Image (cartoon, rainbow, N blue to C red; front, top):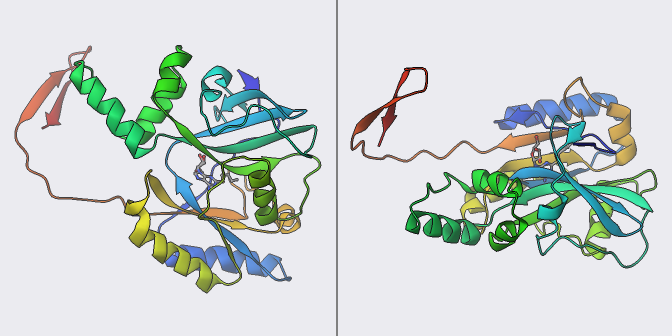
Amino acid sequence: VYEHLYPMYSLPNTYSREDILNFHDRISKNIKEEINYVCELKFDGLAISILYENGILKRALTRGDGMKGEDVTANTKTIKSIPLKLNGTFPNVFEVKGEIIMPHKSFNKLNEERIESGEEPFANPRNAASGSIKLLNSKEVARRQLDCFLYSIHSSTLPYNNHYDNIRFMRDLKFKVSEHIKLCKTLDDVFQYIEYWENKKNNLPYDIDGIVIKLNDLNQREALGFTSKFPRWAIAYKFKAERIATKLLSVDYQVGRTGAITPVAN
Ligand code: IVH
């Protein structure tokens, strides 16, 4: 277990346009300059924080309790899209944060193999990703073909004072950042982005469970600060979980260690 240089925050969840309007109203009361947002996909995996020193990947940590995380460096290094060594100009010490995911292709292959060999398949790509990153055998992790989208960089000396340009800077350093990131000048742009991805999310080769809306300007973010739990400058808009009709074939009654009986629908 190691301490994060910069803590790992989580986001308040919202489910309606009204929540987003309220978020914007609160920000508008405090920020009297022009307000720009950045909209991003909310990747459904597990959070990761990666420390670079002098351009070398030094350590990768899970979120843990937000302040301290578990060391998963060896396994993270097996993810091909994460650079081990950087070229160019960058701060001596910095952290990048992002989400480790298991793309659908890797997930389907892994589950087919597990069923074939009589093992329990994973319920979803998120469980498969978090189960995989904690494995003891890095060779097995490499085989499972995880991927990672980075969504922020943290350092005492960042090149730009806005998020959007820092994301471009990360891309130039060959970090994998999403191509579906949008700078929004108006709330209408934000709503359009949400509507677009509510319709198109199933075309992506990986799972997302919503949209993240972030204030672009880092000075404005600092002025707003944090509540005891969350930043005041970002929210997650979560998609309603998909429901489909299915047929109940039978019910098993599982007997637990303590004798408690749990009905399980098949
Ligand atoms: S930003 C202070 N951006 O969603 C802001 N988070 O509760 C910190 N996530 O576990 C997070 N995609 O790992 C951010 N584009 C994205 C994200 C993202 C997925 C995860 C994150 C965290 C949770 C937020």
